Image (spheres, rainbow, N blue to C red):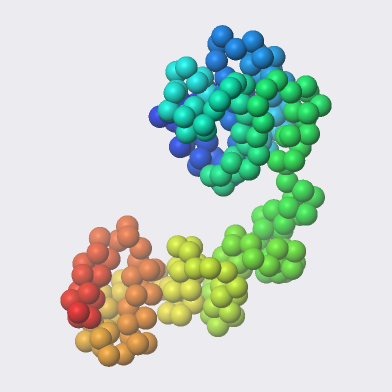
Length: 235
């Protein structure tokens, strides 16, 4: 996989967002920098050999001074590894190939991580439970198993499972489905209208109302209007 030339305009997409999928190595360089010309090909060679498990992003510091400032670069070449939007490792200077190889190797997933990824891809309940035994707080695994349990009408099990990890946008939707179900043929209007008269004094009704809005999602044009109606009733 060829290195990506990144600019200040493309950094968020090509580096920050991409780093949520795989580690991204950011190589800050300049045309006038002799050591950069030595290090660059080594980085490309070693990272290309990972077969896409690590991505190389090159930043010309002269053309992108804002990125240079953001990384607080004092000299180049400067290399930073990013994963899940954060810098996890880095070095400055022209390292030999053996050191570059060691740097990149530390970014690669372990055998256990590869096993978890394979079990997650399999996606059946047995595989997901085995993977959770290896990584009990893995959100991807918990959400995937939670969705299976909800589909199997085992909502209480799903809620117990979701309680293992902090709430997020993904877990809220699964939890909502676990509590109220998610019938794709139900347009929810009748239920929400009936619940509006109860939400101020009935905790269960209020939770059901909020859960239905969670399932509808922001893409449903009615969600914002029902949220306004809820606020009016509560306050």
